[in-house]
Amino acid sequence: MKVLLIGGGGREHALAWKLKQSSRVTKIWCAPGNAGISAEAECVNVDSGDVAALVALAEKIRPDLTVTGPELPLVNGIADAFAVRNWAIVGPTRQAAKLEGSKIFSKEFLQRHNIPTAEMYGAFESADKANAALEKVKWPVVMKADGLCAGKGVFLAPDKEAAKSFITSVMEKQELGAGGGRILLEETLEGEELSCIIFTDGERYAALVPTRDHKRVFDGNEGPNTGGMGAYSSDELLPSGLREKIVVQIVAPTLQGLAANGICYQGFLYIGVMLTATGPKVLEFNCRLGDPETQAIVARMDFDLAEVLADVAAGRVDASKLKWKSGASACVVMTSGGYPGKFETGKEITGLREADAGRGVKVLHAGTKFDGDKIVTSGGRVLGVTAAGTNLDEALGRVYEAAQKIHFAGVHFRKDIGAHVSVSGGTINDVPTSQNPPSKKPRVGHPPHF
Image 1: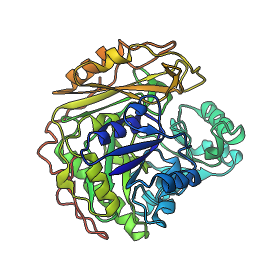
Image 2 (image 1 turned 30 degrees about the vertical axis):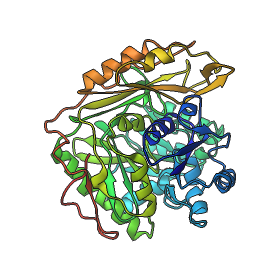
Image 3 (image 1 turned 90 degrees about the vertical axis):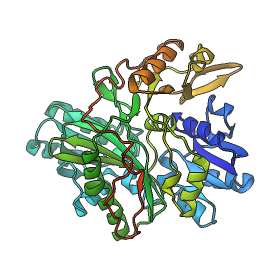
Image 4 (image 1 turned 180 degrees about the vertical axis):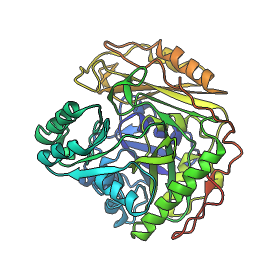
């Protein structure tokens, strides 16, 4: 099997690392890749958001399977372009990807199908109307730019002054680009967040192990939102009763709603959930794997990822193939100083070999490139130090020990990833790893591996 992997971040490095382990895989290309991915795959300098260029690349190299990492090519319609050519690809169509590409579309979908979510105060296409709506909201209020904003389009406004500043920067100054053309206002939910990720072939689905992301840039969940500063996965993350609620109240109605709307969803579906005092509620949908959740998930995989993804693309998901390492895993993201604001690049990174030598540790590259024979920083999120262990403390210990060996000017990372684990009893090992529903009415009698 020859595989084309689209993307160049930490998520894609994790996928490339795992795909390379498959005895079925003879060649991996990654577009565009990064310095770390080059050890696992042949990197090709093609913009991951340029569908036409990716089609041209696939015409040339003829991969047996294409796996899409980031959201932009999916929102731009790469799955549609490949489908008309009968090329195997893992990823939803442009219409299905609107679940992530438009926060307003997603919220209306949730409301239409009675899936628990935050109350929406309104969606607005002008700064004047958005500012006027601030007179009727409860504080703090969640503000979301409608389109893609690289993980920076959500803001928790504590008061009217902060909310107006966000509206000005996003809608008038267009600091987040076209994604800020419309904004959504909704109530603030309180509780613990959970990343529930499934993959589906449009008829059957299976779930990946649960993870929890850390969005704020500083310890104690302080500072602005980022694309993700770290994540962990643990057998003690959720009690079984709550897992079943998520399946019955969220996962099954989502798949039923997609089918009812005539959307055949194929690929990964990320469901961001808030565990509130009144039950689980959907925060957001993503049409792809999370980052850095993928890094933690891949560290626990004990199955042939290439085989399973080929099944997804071919419409024959078999969740019995998914096997997971017991225990836990963690990923801590090392960033450039100043991220998610302005930051400098081109800083030499040292200590990578020493960090990678740690037991159970893998340093996954996100924003790196070669400068001669040196590896230097090339983005805000630079590395994802990842490890598995028999329990979360062991995994985190390995990660932080390895992170201390890596150095570059301005390096920053959170020191409290996984520090606030919510343990409510029960483990996830006694729960079936999937539920395979019919295409129109998914069954929910046995919850998957959340």
